[in-house]
Length: 393
View 1 (tube, rainbow, N blue to C red):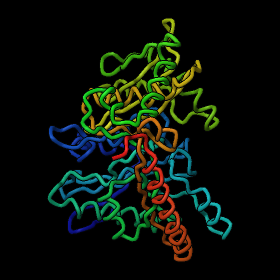
View 2 (cartoon, rainbow, N blue to C red):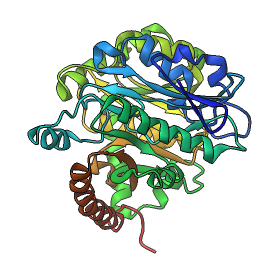
View 3 (cartoon, one colour):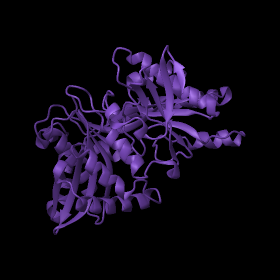
């Protein structure tokens, strides 16, 4: 613990329980208070479920190193969720080439300091404060605290992934480098229903989507359920975990999230969950896990035990659009990668990550690389924006 900015103190804690659920509830963005922005991924419920389930802990290479600012009286004023990482898995902003270059030059890249929502490629506030009056000062203290941890431990770098635009601007002032990437988001243009959304599409694309939806559902005898709140039970989580394991085994070799994680989120934040399940002949055959914030639906995980044409598109994309329209949400964030989402009405969206590298030579090399990468990301987004399925003009 060290004293910063007068009588305030800064420390790192390994577990969220060292902060406490009640104190966390006062942080902007991470708690449901009327009229305020809420992001489920920085809620105490979600982050503590990752830790308590063993999904994000020391044994899996996520060592909690959350940066905390307290007042002279010990009141929590700001938090930066952070981890000492022994690898780069589960982050979705890829720095494996950076690690390889650093180690080939004789350095030790890991452990690094990582502020991210484990296994969650969705933008969410990271510089969380409970004091609006001193908001900028407190966020600056968190950034300085991250740099202090890097310097004290002799780490190669610190990374804050999927940050908001205002956080990126603040971090640039603290010598963090800016990195861009691209996702695909669906935006609600005041649609009253899915047919209303279809009317905004070019005729050929509209016909294609209708064909895909028919083939996914009626042609296969598939029924869809939206499950949230008290409707969720362990039967649903058992089925969904089977789907998740199948996808994880094919993509990563082994799933990141444990079975108990799903039970814990079902217990701690059921009203923030939208589990979209597909059933055929009375049996669940596919599902997609979504989380609901104050203005967005966030698609996270998908899996199936039966493969049917276009079922993935229906469960993950079209049903998410249906839900967002019905609940008057501004957008659907469909997760990392996937240019195939473009034809389904999802549009390119730029995401931002920030990186602190103290070594001058390595920083210069990364900075030069990022200039070209940012230009390419912007070029790709502009190119794809001209090829959305919406009617021109």
